[in-house]
Structure formats: C-alpha cells, structure tokens
Image (cartoon, rainbow, N blue to C red; front, top):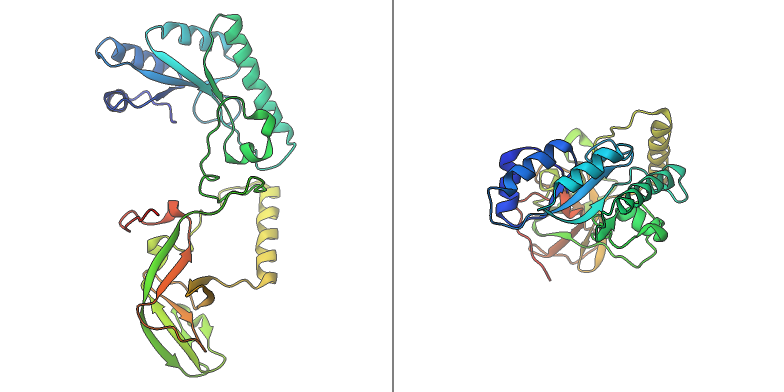
Length: 287
C-alpha cells in the first residue's frame, strides 16, 4: 500500500506477483520500464493524495493523474484509492472534504474514458463512522484486530493475547518494595507470582506522543487526567479471573498480586496486548 520509485523494490514486488501502488510520475516511469522487461502481468492501484501529505498524486494535479494512467496502457490498473487523516471523528468537515476531492478525481477519470473497477478510501475509523463512504472497497486494519479508537458499532472483538506461564510464587511481608524504582510497596502480607513477560515482548508499550498543536496537547492532558482519576491498574487473567500487576513492568519480567488464590507455578497467564507490538520472536498460535 506504499508507492515507491525504487527500482529494486518494484522488481521484487512484481517478481512475487504482488499488487503494487503507483502514486507518482516517477513510480509510473519505473513501472513502465519494468513492464517491457518482464513477462509477468503487472497489477496496480493508483494512490491519490487528497490531503494526507504522504503518498500519492496530488488530487489537484488532474492532468498529471490522467496522463500517467493513460501511459500505463499495458499495466492492469485494478483500483484507485486515497487515505483519510482525521476520520476518527464523526461528521468531520475535513474528512468530508477529502472524500469529495477523491470523488472529483474519479469523475474526472470517467470523463477521460478511464474506468477503474475498485475505489477505496475508508480506513478502519472511516469504515465505522462513515458508512456512505465505503464505495466498493475498504481497508480494515486496526478494526480487524478489534482495536479501534472509534465507536465499535459492528460487533468487533479484540483478537490476539499474549500467553505465558507463572515461573515463581513467593510471599512478601507488609511494606515490601516491588519492582524498579520502588514503585510499589505492599500494604499487607502479599502473595505474588512472577511471569517472564515485559515491555521488550511488546507489553504495555505505546507510541510516543508526536502531536504538537495546542489542542492535541490539551486532549492528551485530558486523557491522562481521566486515567489518573480512574486509578486503573494493569491486569492479567489467570484461571478466568483478573489479577493486578504490581510494580513497574520490567524488561522481561513482572509481578502479579495473587493473594488469597490457589494459583500454582506453571498456571497459564493471559495478557491483553496489541499483536502489532508483540516481538516477532514470540511464537504465534492461531485458533
């Protein structure tokens, strides 16, 4: 789904029969060159930049879009698409503007006798928030994982959880420090379980805040305050019950409060985690 003008990358994609994206005059020229040197059918989608500022022909450069598509006469152009930048919010003027820009490009192509079969612009938030913008294709990423920032109105459930075993159980006295920075002190005699999972495995990590507008900083501050007031704890599931993680999550280990339970060493522990963040060395099991 990324346009590239790097010849060796396009050669590899074409060799493996992967549908490529063409989003610039430069990438179109490289694809045309490669089309004369291969006996493989080259399949492609055209990317239009309607205001995201990343890949794609600028929506306003309609002549360049038309000319480049027509020059790809021996390439199978199967689709055309764009990408929303702010579809997390319903009835957003900018999202509607992007959609109208995309429709305008499609209309221009049709007026120039260019008819492409598949049109898609909806990412996961747009798919959930803007049913009238589905067109005849959509790209479901985070929604497929059930991890979306928009109202989940289609019954999606989270998929993917991290599974491990309890490796040690011990009882510590009241007032005992748990974890780095002495971040947790027991309030009473506490039975704890140790598991060999930490942030290096992809648990409890998140993207660093990279938005700098004042309104974005206010929104982030609001979320932080709400989280603080809720006093939420990280939890794991053992034998179908929730237990609190105590102390800081370490690189490869963490402690769990299992006081007043009959949990044993080697019992299974399940952690809610975004599968995209889980280290690639961890074995995947599909059920």
